Length: 260
Image 1 (cartoon, helix red, strand yellow):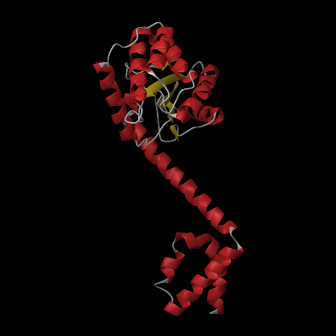
Image 2 (cartoon, one colour; image 1 turned 45 degrees about the vertical axis):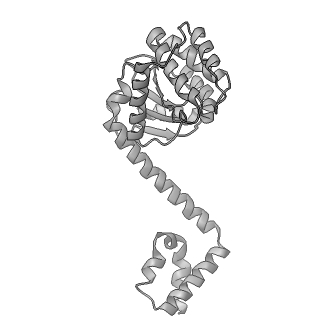
Image 3 (cartoon, helix red, strand yellow; image 1 turned 30 degrees about the vertical axis):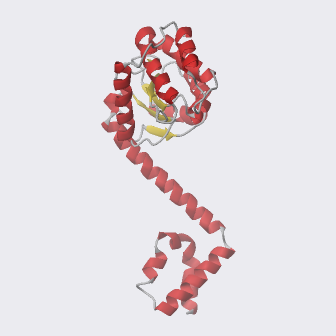
């Protein structure tokens, strides 16, 4: 049993979380298995940094696998992501790199991300920025969908410049999580030089439904979500998907990677 203790003490840090104990059940007697469990528990109590390290490695592995799946999905849907003429976009149409954002006007994290996106846009005038309205909170807050439809109509009427005024204006109100009102939306539509919606737009509704289906097929489960990729020649290595709030530095790094 002393030999068993030495083996466990030496190997537990690397192999415990990878199935060593499960394997031990087919190798040792019940008494030995019980003793191994006690040794392992004592070791982990004495060395809690082992669990932290294992947890970090498992998280990194999960993120790597998630990124691979995201990239695969993006490659399959790249035409819908990059070439939908109804989708609001800013920046040169012949850009080498595109950044696509899925967002909801009532998402507080999207609100926090808005000035970050503005900063990145100013720093990257040669990048194509594509905005996918993704009102996942519409069932909770009707303004989520209303603002998305209005954004669609502003883009159709006033193009990129008008859309960006509207888009940034909505976030500039600071109203999210159900606080945005129809009056707020109408005011930003007017500020963009467009006509406020009298009623829900059928075309806008269909376009939003298409976005929702696209986001679902990509595996997106929340907002914001950023996809950075080349406009042509995308591969699993030059695509980056960043779910959740991220920094300007992270977005810039992904843009640089896509532009290599």
